[in-house]
Structure formats: structure tokens, C-alpha cells
Image 1 (cartoon, rainbow over the protein chains, first blue to last red):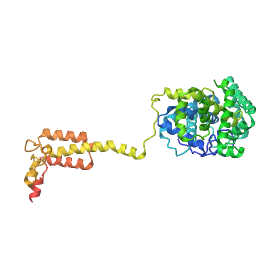
Image 2: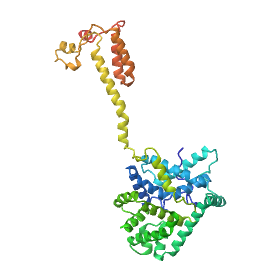
Image 3: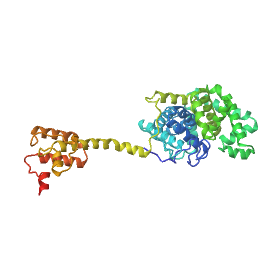
Image 4: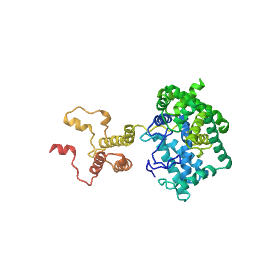
Length: 219
Length: 195
């Protein structure tokens, strides 16, 4: 069953109005164009391009599915199924909507099918969660998996925060404006009064510094 | 060189990489496990920054998805984009049109070869004074009228191919079959012309 496109719960756990957003936090951005470019490459037979789309949306899809299922232990299996379905169907993706919208729709339908097959009442994806419900679900997400996995997730968050704190101010500002505020390179350049190329370099160096801290955890 | 590639990868993640640089980078990343790992690390860091303490996919998740896709039959052949609508329309019509063409050809041959009055088709041309038609269409048919065996063959043909023939072709062949029935009064083309 097809679902309306604009009523998904926000995958970041917020209770803001349900406008779909991409990694940049702004709809219709350059990141969306970048997705489309990757999709076209998958359609032309570049299998590796799909891996990049999976890497890009893995956290968002797992988080979305976990909220719908109310069972974080199952979330990765169902999210995996959603990605496989997306790969199978990507030949029919024409770019009428953003790739993440299309992907989220597949994920929601896959989660709903899973719930239906197990005769459980799915979470109404159009309904807002109350703050207390949200807190319970988020808590179960964090702790519903194995203790090792939960500990690793906590460790990743701590490591990223620590790496950010240790960054020089110009790198920290650039990465926060990009990742948290969702500004484009041009907007960051204006805010920091520096060339776009410098912004690109600062963001890259910030990411490299964080990666050096994260690598031992993710390997 | 590696730093330059990784910086491009960072820009790709932000949608800030020039389109003409994407192709080469994607090819490199497809072949290089370390680049893919780093790309995943960049994404994880960004997600952690946006939702501190939120759920994250496990470290091996993307690799498991990739393996699941590879394990599927036909994973080696990537799903290609659907052809444009006009191509799909052409494909949709091609098969029935070909079938109709074959059926029409067979129907024409049946009309020419199994004439109700038993005359050869080139008689028309000879009587009208026009040049004789090409021999390929003027095959003589022996016998003054269709034999029961010939009628049976024609009926078999109609049963087997009628569903593929166009309505016009079907009507012509059935007309011939009816005309060939001795029990039905028939008016030949020649007699009608003579009136």
C-alpha cells in the first residue's frame, strides 16, 4: 500500500512538523542533487554507488524503522530489507521525488508489512509521540539492543563529542555550521568571512580528525 | 593524492562536489574499502552531532546490506533504469503487431491458395487483360472445389491462428470458408462482375 509522502515521523526524533529533510537539513538542496547523481549511476550499472547511498542513509532509516516497530532489536533487519527492496526497485526511480523521500516510503511500507505479518498494531506513523512516549521509545532504542551494541553507540557519541571539543575553533565552527545547522558551503563562507574553498578544506579536516578518533571503534 | 580524494568525498557527502568529479570519485570509492569506511565514518559523525545520544546503525550494517544485495540472484546485473515511455510503448505493441502481420500473411495465402471456385488466382489477371501476377502468389490449386480434407485443414488453421488475426483478416477467411461450403449458394467474383 502506498503511503502519503509528507507525513512520516521525523527520523531525528524531533516533534517538529513533518517536513522531509535531507542531511543538510534543507529540502531541495545540493545534497539532494548529489543523491540523484548517485541514483543515476546505480541505474547505469555502478553497483558501488548504491553502497554510498546505504552509508549515507543507514542511520536515518534504522532510526525511522525502530520508531515504527517500537522494537529496536528488529530495526536493522527490517531496515536491511528496505534497502534491498530499494535496490531492486531503483530502476523505476525517476526522480519525481527526492531519493530520501522514496527510500523512506519503502522503509515505512516494509515496517508496516512486518508489523502486519506479526499481527501487532503498528505505531500510527502520522501521529505525534508525546514527549514521555518519545523518551521511552528513544530509551528502548538505545538500550533494546545487546548491551555491547548499546555501549558502542554510547562510546561513539562520546568520542565524536570529544573530537569536536578538541578541534581548533575554525574547524569546529565550520563542521557545526554544516552538520548541525545545515548551511551550504557558500553560507558558511559568508558566516565565517572566508573563501568557499577554505570552508571545504576546514570541514574535511574536521571530519578527518573525528575519523581518526572513531576508526578504532568502527573497525 | 589521498587527501585530495578524501576531501572530494567530504564535498560529495555535502552535495558540494562538481558533477564532473562525481563519476571518477564514485568509481574509486567502489573499489576502495578504506574510502568507503571513511565515508561511513563521516556520515556517522554527522549523525551523532545532529542527534546526540540517538540510535545509530551498527558498524557492520552497511556491509551486511551490501552482502545481502550481492547474495540475491542477479545482483551482478544492476537494475537498469526503465526505458523511456515511448520505447515501452513500442515494445508493448511490437509483439501483437508481429503476430497480426504473420496471421494476416497466412490469411492472404489461404485466400489465394484455397479459392472457392477452384480457379487459379492468376485467372483474374488473365481475364482482365492485366499482366500476370508474380508466380509466388499464383500457385495453382488442383481440383474444381475444395475437398473435405482441404476444408478440414482450413478449419484447423482457423482454430489455431484465428486469435492472432485481425478482425478483417478473420472475416475474410471465414467468408472463404463459408463460400467453400457446397451447401451455401455462392456468387463468385467473376459472376458478380459479369452482371
